[in-house]
Amino acid sequence: MFKRSYAFHCARNLLSPATIAVVALLSPSAFATTSAVDVYLNSVYQSTISTTTIQGLSTYGTYNYSGVTNAPANQYYTAEGATLGEILEQVSALTGNLSSITMVVVHSPVGPNFTRTFCSPQSQLFTDRNYYPDLSNSAVYSEVPAILAALSKPRDSGTLSSTDALRLFFGHLSTTERNIPYFTKEVDEIDVYTGETGCSGGYGYL
Image 1 (cartoon, helix red, strand yellow):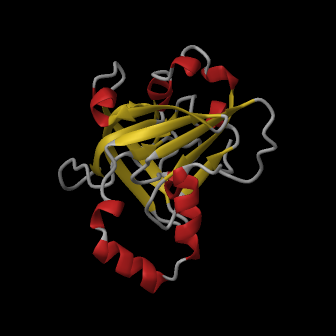
Image 2 (cartoon, helix red, strand yellow; image 1 turned 45 degrees about the vertical axis):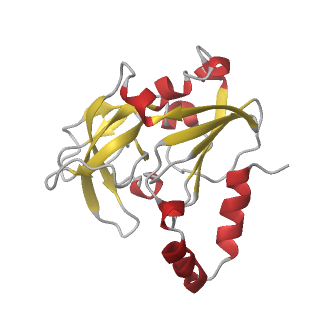
């Protein structure tokens, strides 16, 4: 049996833009900011982790992220969240076993990016990557972890907001790496897999 969210994402991809707009008007709560994330291990449901739990974790804090869009265009964010690794370790089957994860699939009920796949999560999500405070200068950077953010905003304007929560943020390894298309908004499900998955495609920067 397909998981609820998988069937939901597939059904949404079959809808026309006009139909999606009508559904959004009739059911605004379907596209509301997420306040919890369901975790699956090898397609088996494990746990639901709430924003409240995330905010109580030891790695919860404020982090800065830089990134590049597909355009390409440079963008910068400030985000408040906990590391993806510590969040996943709240699942008993994954506690102390993050090194066994070979694929991560992140789901969202909002577009345009409903599903994002990471075929090399050990280097892409469970190893700190770089934040460049000025993307025109590759020599200056600091390391940041991948997080699920409860609050975020553009780095140089506005105030922290839960509008896009829970949102995935992670660093990059060069000033031209186009990571922003994978900064998934309103994450409501994370599927993790161990062993051989045959994963191909997905995020392309190791």
